[in-house]
Length: 340
Image (cartoon, rainbow, N blue to C red):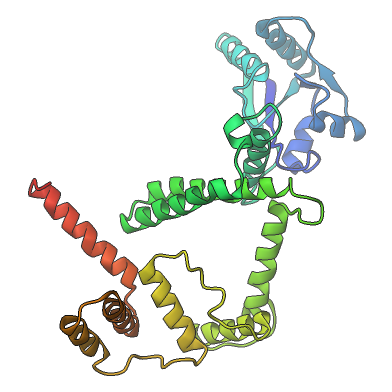
C-alpha cells in the first residue's frame, strides 16, 4: 500500500514545533512542498531533511502525478500544506491528488496535523489583518480614522454586545464580541503610529492587562488566602486603593456612562470607600418622590432618580438593566398590539 501524507501546519506556531508523529512521517519518505522557501521547509532542511520542489512549470495534475510517483517509488511521501489547503497552488494540487486517488485503491492518502495551536493563537490573525488594513495599500477608510473618530463605534459595539446578552443570544454575542475586539485591535494599531515617546501596541495592552490581573488576584498567583467571594472583592478594593496612591476612588468613574449606570457606579464606589453608607436611609425614596410631586424640577427629578438607584442597589438590582428591560417590554407589547 502506497502512502501519501498531507502534512498541515499553522503559521501561528513556530515552524519547528512539530508533533512526534509529524517528525516520524517526515522521515519515512521524500518530502515535497509547493513553496520550498516556506518557513517550515527551511527548518526541515536545517534539520537535515531534504525538501523537494514540485516541478515547475506544470499543471496541478502534473504536480499530483509527481507526488504519487515519488510515493510509489519510496512507499511513502509527504506533501507540506498550510492551514488552509484550499488556497492555490497547494489547494489545486491536493484536489488533483484526490481525483487521482479514485482510480488507485492501493493508495492511502491521509492528512496529519503537524502542530497544535495554543488557545488565543488566532488573535495573531486579528493583529496581522488590522495591520494590513491600516498600512499603505490597505483600506482608505481604515487609514483615515483616529481615536476620536472611532470612539462612537466602540460605544456602539459594546451596546450591541450588551443587547446580545440581554437576548440570551450566544451566537450574536460571539459576533458582537468580535466587533468589540476589532475596536481594541484598531485603537492599538493606531497607537503604533504615535511619536516614539507616546507609542504603544496591542502587546502593551495585553501585558498591562495580565499584570493587572495577576496583581489583583494574589489569592491565585501568590500566597494570599481568602475566604469566599466577598473577601476577594474586599481585597480587590484594597489593592486598587493602593494603586491609586491616595487619589479618590470616584475620580476614575467615566462620566460618559449612561446616567443610571453612572449613578450606580458612583454610589457603589463611594460605599466601598466608606464615603457613604452601604445602604440608603429608610424612606429616602419616598421622601424624594414627595419632593418631586410637590415641586417638579430637574433637581428634584435628579434626587428622585438618585434615590431610586440607591434603593435598587441595596437589593442588588442593576438599575440600567431594570429600566432597559421595562423599555423593551413596553416596545414589544406596543409592537404586538400594532401601536405606532
